Length: 249
Ligand code: MG
Image (cartoon, rainbow, N blue to C red):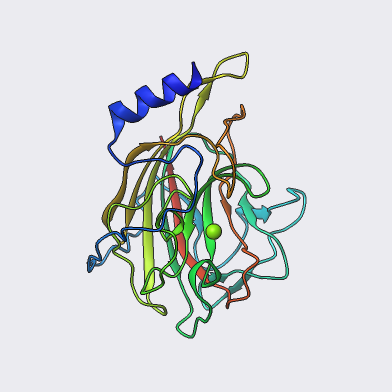
């Protein structure tokens, strides 16, 4: 029933290929595209999640009673590798999200160990949800379903419009949360559309479940969720975020 529903949804909504058991996909690499500017100021009806000044809209990723422990400086937000993820105070269901991020110019490491972070589009527990990958996208080979702008281990971006380390990048995301029946079964999957530096990279993809690094994705019933930003355990220098705003749908 679930598999059939998902298969039907995938055939109807999109040609991008999801891999059922989410192995690492080694290629071919999406075509590199040079992007234009895509740094969008918040419209009047947006909720500002980060304005360069405070973390008032955020709390700790593993304890919602504790403050978000990342660093605000010079109008930007930088990952603190000594603490965990951060998550929004507010809960969301369907939304349009804009977020900008930057890999440090002097980043080191390679593959998944080079500027790894992520946007959990709905985080129903710490590190559990649906991750839009953040990673150095510039001449940084890794498995293509784990590269920047992938829906981690599920959907490869259509192209690679990523910029060099040290340059700001943007994601614009339209997220429709999954719906569940009263008995916990899936009614309709999560749907994500993503623009990376203004270029379409995820075209209305139907997620197979939460993103994880092994096993078959499996939906677990949840309601409205916070959005979380990932502190990855890699040893590379922490990345930064700015200009984060959201419009509820
Ligand atoms: Mg990540």
